[in-house]
Image (cartoon, rainbow, N blue to C red; front, side, top):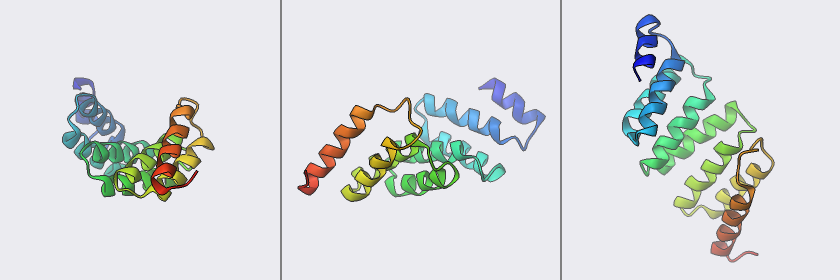
Amino acid sequence: MDHYRRALSLSAGEAQAYLGIANVYRDQWNYTDAAEQYKKAIQLNPNAAKAYEGLGSAYYLLSRYDEAIEQLKKTIQLSPNDAWAYDSLGDAYIKLKRYDDAIAAWMRVLGGDGESIDRGGVDKKIRAAKQKLGKK
């Protein structure tokens, strides 16, 4: 964290430093402070897809699902093939019982850039959501 704080003292407008601090807070399970730092990064760089993704994740972990969806959609606007963002978007939709939207998001995961995405896990989530809808 000190590394990022020093970076801020040298360059008060450095979005990347705020993103780094936010990630440290997130890793410490301090999602409220992480969200505040992600917002600062976004103010300085409105095209920082990773900041929107982090903010969406923080909101999700704070059970603020509507806000998570909003931020994850912004991530996808900036990075349309971000499989992780689609996966998280599906997870947020499922919390709100928006099963069709969750399925659509997870289907996009399978076509995205997610080499590190657990495709079997995504398939399992799709099947579970379809079951909730009574679909096969």
